[in-house]
Image (cartoon, rainbow, N blue to C red; front, top):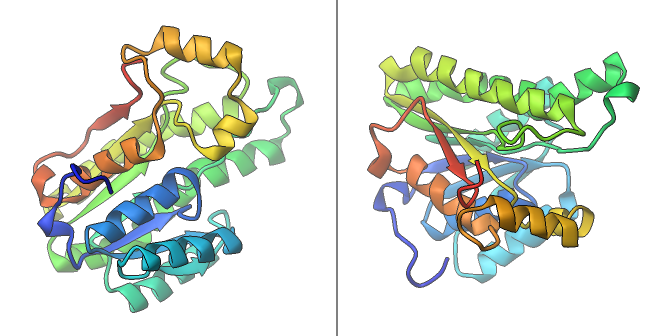
Length: 256
């Protein structure tokens, strides 16, 4: 956290689950929630990065997050890991469905198996993570679920139709769960990151042409970084946003 970042007292001591938490936006989410005094748990398959993140959070003087290795496309393993983490961190009051993979693909070469795999890594696990955590949230009298979509399909980007289809569906999933869970005071929102400058994005996709496209598209002529997204998620997870649900929240510098 930066010195001028907001502090949310309602997050202190709350159990927070983050999928895909070992790197990129997910790692920033882990660090920001830990800095708020939350009991953070996260799932990933990148064990070395996860261990380094845990050490980094602890070295900053915060409660060390707890971690379980699980492939989110394996629903049985995902839900088992959620159960184990709830035992370590406590029943989850906050779920952040962050895990995804924006692999580019040519529509002409997509097979049924590849299509199903993209749906599994980008969409399906969000439903089953909610299914796993919602009963405890209901019993506790409320909670906050934040699903991650993407601005990619709003911008009409090509070159990854299975990914953009998955991300479009997440907005519908969010609205359905907001209605189904609202009576239990569980808020469900969707965050749409724009082009966030993670290490992966900068190493794979950022070039001079991409920078010109981003600069021309965004109203705010600056790069977006993972903490920009994390700060929005903190607010959505906190009691400060207690009546905010069934919405999409875009962090893209005004591109869409």
